[in-house]
Image (cartoon, rainbow, N blue to C red; front, side, top):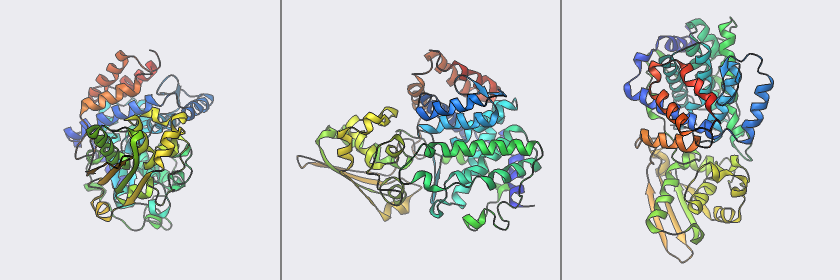
Length: 454
């Protein structure tokens, strides 16, 4: 039996009963959080462009889009995943040498589950499988330092989750994962240098291809079953690794983390730190002379000016949410980091452009050694009058050591979705997700049509 066949056996054998009560709760909360992020992105320019394309090609309206309209499952996977991802406000998983966003899989699995007339238990199980596959491959087979994107591991995860949602057998599941994993190798350049729309659309594309791969397998198309260990297979890129899939559980969701602030995940503890200092000492952003930050090396490399660009040139939303300098500056000026902090007129305003250039970031090896079990940083803010204030953080509210409460995530969902749905519709979403194990997936997706009907 090849490794992908072993993975397919894991996918087939896991059931809803394998999920702990805590995992079920956290999966529900991530669906709520993801849909809040999705609804909050409905009026963004790239999303509207994608919607035009989807509508043009929607000849087979099988499943519901988030918002008005129906389309084929693979296109719904792309569009709904783009909504979940665009704000960069959804969940994350931290491995030592890889970071991913497992809720990126939701759009594809929702589309497949609706197509298959699945129930909520099947949806939650399929989503848990996608989380497990992506998180464990991120642990054991990182590829970021070799120039490849985290969506590469996601290609295996999304195909596994979609296959489960569609009810494919073990053989077809193995072929679906093999097709998707072989054809979805993505370059890290989408997150380095001058960032484009593709930063937020790379995983939706993976979701599209992974869903299409599962449907190809459903209709009998085969893939390379030695995708992992074969000649020129995935291990030629990742290096050797071993995952004993039959022994894997469905609990990785418990180690995923949620965003308190609308910014790249590695910035969260630093953002909480600067805002705590400001609340305690009551200074204004305009009074700051400089900000000094010591942080773990992954944050420094990705958003702090290390390996993936200096992060001083910030002109677009994509560049802003991946610049630690920008998000700290705008947080101290506006006392928050939400989607409105990424409007172009806010990004380019002189106050934040000036302050971000006075943010100085350096890596700290001791902090790097503590990552990813902690997200440590030290911050010193010096005011123009010479006073300075310091704080040390090891995590933030939303990290797995301090998870956000259900009430906090409901509030986040309400705030993000408020411009697009009524309070009554918001309550229906929250109630439906809470009762999801006893409902059909269509009971959730039919609510998508209420969006924008305030």
